[in-house]
Image 1 (cartoon, helix red, strand yellow):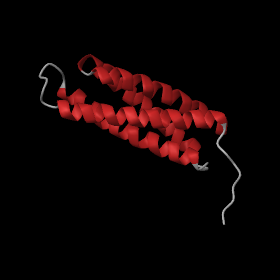
Image 2 (tube, rainbow, N blue to C red):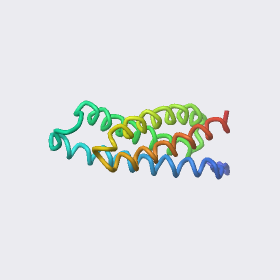
Image 3 (cartoon, rainbow, N blue to C red):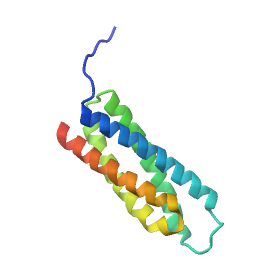
Length: 126
């Protein structure tokens, strides 16, 4: 039987929560944009497709980061660094697309918050 009395620290728990919230909004944002493809000729379709793909990537890496931190993986620090980078890229593209899709503003804000907490987490465990 495995017994491990280690528990995630408070900052790690905050980062886990931010990653899960970011994954959720990114999934919602991407799904909503998929439903909009071809319905609005007034914006750049390439930007919309890039935004969808980045939101999907961001959701995946955020969910994985939360899982690795939850189980106190020794690789969580490295993954949190990657997560912060992808969250930043997603936020940049969502900010560009926000005039055409209001959910992108919320998504960008959540991505920025998650990126900051992931950077803090990676620095604290380094």
